[in-house]
Length: 137
Image (tube, rainbow, N blue to C red; front, side, top):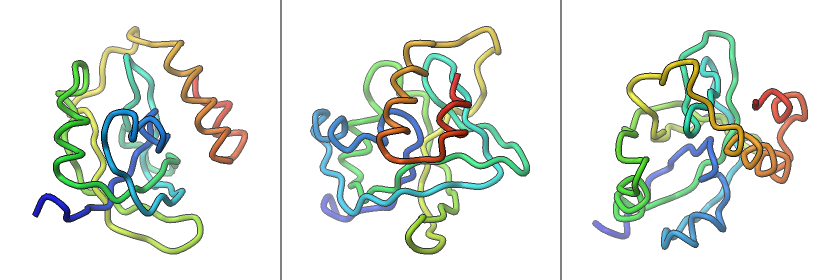
């Protein structure tokens, strides 16, 4: 059971496979993707908020339950909960995936500019649309 992998849509700094490996996760099958009807928002970290007509880009990885338990037990991440999404792989089709998200959006005044700067670098490095990268503030 511990080696079974689930598709997980990552949309924040965890889109960086090297960062996942640094945190002792073992991601496989990396695929650039997007989810429709969600918008990216930056609070202390990234989260997705429902927004009809919006699109959020990220990466789908195959990860184990052990990987996910470890990643989301870190300080500041324990409030994230798994949700089901339909990710659209850029070089393929739709695939069901888990997506870790906060149950409630933080107050609008909560913002982490350093996180947004780092996220823009990751998004640009993955080759996502420039207008999307620029929208991360």
